[in-house]
Image 1: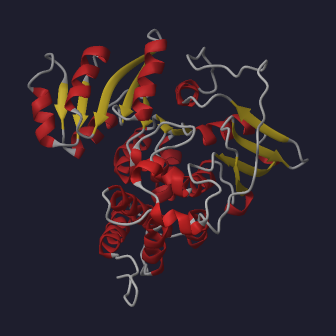
Image 2 (image 1 turned 90 degrees about the vertical axis):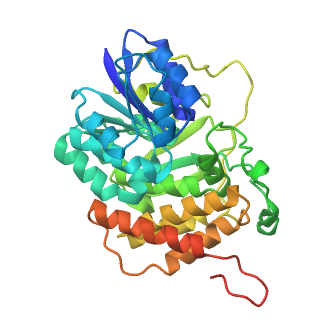
Image 3 (image 1 turned 90 degrees about the horizontal axis):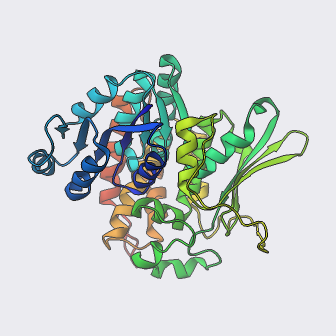
Length: 389
């Protein structure tokens, strides 16, 4: 029986992790659940999964939840409560790190410090603090196992052939605006941006997929996970989203992982790797005639890919600043504060104003993140005859 802690239990990855646990009740038990504020869903989850403890970041909602739970279930809202429970977990516990954005950094670091299996669904953690997280995991014997379908595919395709890998290819649906002209993106609505053609995800990652920022972040994440230089990681648009990523070997052979668009495959594999179990996911129907297409992304229309590579090459605090500025930009777009195309304009402007910042410790990473968020809040769209900040 594998103990599982789900960070982001009420989100898309969290819900699908619960599906995996329900499909294999003899293999997995959810012992800890963490979310931001959804009291009603968390209350239902406690009845369903019977965890030992739950965490809600919103203190008032955590208090409301605590008043209506069975005896023996601990409830907390302080960040220390969450990290302490992770640090106290048995060494064979798996942590599904699916908290959205930078908020997932501290608990993921705690899991790495405890030497646990970290099933990493939060790419922002490695983008913002890759060196710190990877060094912490190495020093304490933790394993970082990817949950993103693209990185799970790369892990499977690489297998034991790491020394012979020439290039990694991360696939991309192209998002809802594939084929659009740059000028048309100024008028994109929130509703349009949240209408992803193949995946159903949370709002932040869905907007990132529409700007292609998500693919740029995945390139940076893959560089850390597989110790691969950025120039050997490419992105290719594949609208059908069946081929999840490809590994090109030095002799020209290409290994790919194919499956339906179902995150439960990658989640379950992260919990069991290298073992495999039967999955509730649908299978590809090979009797059905189908065509798959591949093309290069249009980086002139979607400059987020370029911004991520530039930040990765610059190193230091640049990826941390990129990640924070993008998170704030997406939040501002969702509330109607800026246009869709302003997301990368804002991000590029904040990167361009970045002072000399160190990024070796958690305190320095938090400082860089805070600086970028303040700058992102100050940024104003360009108007005729007026500056952008």
